[in-house]
Length: 617
Image 1 (cartoon, rainbow, N blue to C red):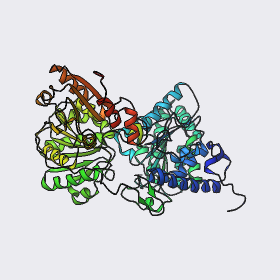
Image 2 (tube, rainbow, N blue to C red):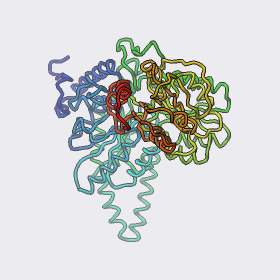
Image 3 (cartoon, rainbow, N blue to C red):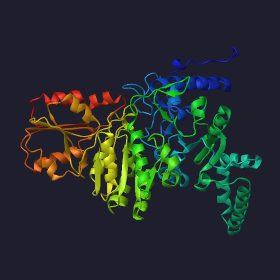
């Protein structure tokens, strides 16, 4: 390396101000260091690898052109923020750990984080809201939203784009395209028109010309003729795209790994008097062989890995719940030829690759379009096929209306596989799966269930094929340690898994049952495998106990727990009721064990409650 080039120590970066004084070559060297740091720290902590490696140059270019202490930067979905965090003085040492740096933008972490993306496709709407207030206050700063090609397929993104295109408040949109999905504009005239469309002086002169010409009837006629001629040439030499059509100026596509080209486009966008879309072409996983060559999305979000070999460090003793549920669905779809599987962009996460390969004609990835997935399912159900929707708990919340109106209201049959139910771990508050139970509880014609082992999951899956309306099967982000044995239970029925003839009874469900049974062999334990409906015969069998401990470490009390307590009250239960459920809060990142401890639903908390002589809580 030339002695004239300045090499930046990643650990000494306090703010992005230092970028303003670096040459292009020095910025490129910094990008290489940032990549090394991302690979190194994610190999230890896990996280979003490919998406972050793909936007390193883009992030550096953004911070070198804008001042995001004053300007606003919104990252959609937020899982591409690692370079942004490094440049704003935050270490990835404790990435995604309790009290460490989050894997997403967090306003409490830094003045440079003005936005927190809960889920995808929200950035454009939020950016427009910020721009509206800026203009109301006659302030002077730029609002920049970075949105990827996956997030932009969502209907919400198009709603925001439509509003931005026809509104007066300027937003700069970076369309981060890691697969070239919009036709490329080429040639000198295309570049010329591109420059003048985003030029402040051009837009001012255009408006002045229009006002002057439209003062007379002849001038108005001449203006219309000239406008038509200009538009004809524009169409001939610069093919329009959806951004043009929606009223935004368009720059691109440009190389998203060329800092000089990126800076030029960003400065051009700053000068524009109207909203601009900069279309950047990037390589997801850039600079790390295993992530760069991945075509399935395996390297999107990963556990810790060996950075030399690319091998993931997983629990080799047990398979994941996602993988085992997928294997059951495979058998289920083989048996029932009138089933169709729908998944919103989480094929790898839910381990559905084999299903999508072997049942190509009956598996649909609808992209990040959760609402569409459930409305599509209603159409399938109305035509006498059985839809199966595999979806993460936290993403299902976006489809509340469609579940209620398009499925449950018409009492249509549908199986919902609710992956990542319960406390989620390192992804933190935006991804917790603790609210879906209470959400579904408010909707009629919905069944909610949670198996404790693979055998129970198989029975529930077969039951969901029958005429029970919307049938949700919840399972956690965890390893399946218990295959289970054959057990007979009817729809809605609870059953005893430990009959110790005790005065106390623990009512619980899900995989935690195995641990509860081992830890408390002298206490009666009931598997409330169906959280909804709660049948009266289930309640009546429990009225004899002096104390009922309701243990739900997978959701807040607003769903099953509160409804069960209400049923006990209606049946004049006079004993003690003890409740352990996840607290109603947005639970921050940590291990699942740490989160259970924080929420008061660990096995130690259960033990303390059982040993307590306190009354109703």
